[in-house]
Amino acid sequence: MQRLDVIVHTISLASGTSRGYELRAADGGALPSFENGAHIDVHLGPALVRQYSLCTSPRERNRYLSCVRRDDSSRGGSRTLHRDFTVGRRLRISPPRNHFPLVAAGHHVLLAGGIGITALLSMAEALAARGASFVLHHYTSSAAEALLLEWLQTSAVGERAVVHHSDRGDTVRAGLPAELQVPEPDAAIYVCGSDGFMTHVVAEATAAGRHPGQLHSERFAPAAPPSAEAGDGAKAGDRAKPGDGAKAKVATAFTVRIASPGTGYRVPADRTIAGVLTAHGVEVELSCEQGICGACLTPCPGRRTRPPRRGPDPGRARGRRPDHSLLLPRPHPRTPPRSLTRDP
Image 1 (cartoon, rainbow, N blue to C red):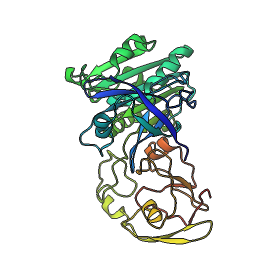
Image 2 (image 1 turned 180 degrees about the horizontal axis):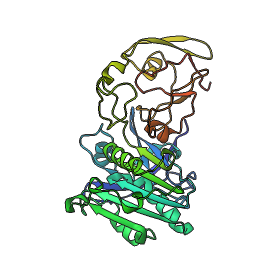
Image 3 (image 1 turned 90 degrees about the vertical axis):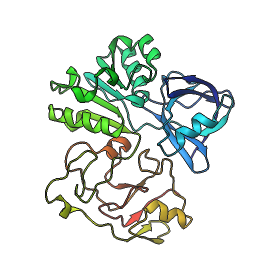
């Protein structure tokens, strides 16, 4: 996988617990182009890679800007970045990837929960530059924790942005924005934030008459795995139904075969495909190691995946995965692959 050498050029305070990191090419040259909604992989240390959305406009080729909220309950990426990375620090990143593209629509409704504003802000600026019809709703815990609030209020997006503070009783659970109350067939809805925030918005928007094709989301963590009570295929936020426990499948061991040269590897019930392959020295392209960023997406000849039972599939929305592919670090697939294809 290609890597880029960059330097931390500036660090700014984006909110009470968040910092903005401006990255520039170590050689002083232009950085690779990207589209609105893209993210980069940041290599923070051995086996520590995290994905951060780009806030800057694609027109700016001299720098990337990402905002990171410190979360002491996370897996360690944000703590490492806040604690160890200072101005002048050299690090490696991936070229930008975009699994959250801005689609054409008559009207765009953007809903950001907390740190989710990082993925939607550049989209809003692009829509404003085009003179397109859109509105941006930014949900925060308080004014002090409103990420990039000053930038938002002073940019071209400001007059189309509505900021909500939960400490003032203005939360998404108190009711969806008016733009989502009435179905608009030509509208595209973008949601980014915590799993709970997105699950609630998608469920309410669907209940209000929005169809799955209008809903686009990006997750920063995997959706909660299905429990025995929730049944096979349950999504995060789904409630268990009587008798669903009988539908839950128990993971079983299977053999996965690399199409070329044809070597097979046994995958125990308590292991992932990625874990088994790497343990045997098979090079697997991994980044987030959770099946979210899409780096591990691997073709599986002859395998057909089963469509989601209802509503949008968060993994499919995030990774744009085709029907004959697999996210290797995810728990056991419903249909084990017979073979995998990988680049030599």
